[in-house]
Image (cartoon, rainbow, N blue to C red):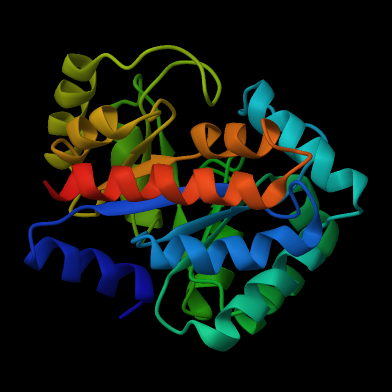
Length: 267
């Protein structure tokens, strides 16, 4: 059983939902990421999505785009992101790590080379934003052979057929993009999310994490009542962007926000 499956099973048995933060590796500087990951675990997160900086993050809004730019200015890469993951795993054998990014760096490394590198870093899941299930079979198979889950994105307009395809090829969990548009944009329509989750849950047994609009404790609590996990990204990275001259203060603000989300989700 994968760490992701074990984590969602454990949470389900206790009636709790997964708190899943997203951060960009190397933002605002390379040595900031690893300590933040450990502090996030102490704050009660269940899964960490570690973003691979990319020069054209088309699914991301301005906040995460600028995070990639800051990381790339420090020469961050897929290889260096995997090195951070490997270092994290030396002292944390429990928290699942999901690598989240775009296809270009993976193709540059080669599917098999990437799968081997991800296995060596003890990555638990890979979410490639621009790799649909129709084209993702080869990569998914290589990852599956190494015990790594492939996670797919579901959208508000995903059809039953598409949900079935992603459920069949994917594992670990499905990521439901609760808004049309990019990360950090818009306002969640809870009724729409609830209706879509009913459709998804009628088709798949995989857990569903919900993201693209979680900004505060109130939203997290509401979303936790609809799916199996709450994904928060832009709200965390905004803390970094607001404190570029004082990264340690950014870390404190991120931990405070995550702690408030955890408390609200568990209440």
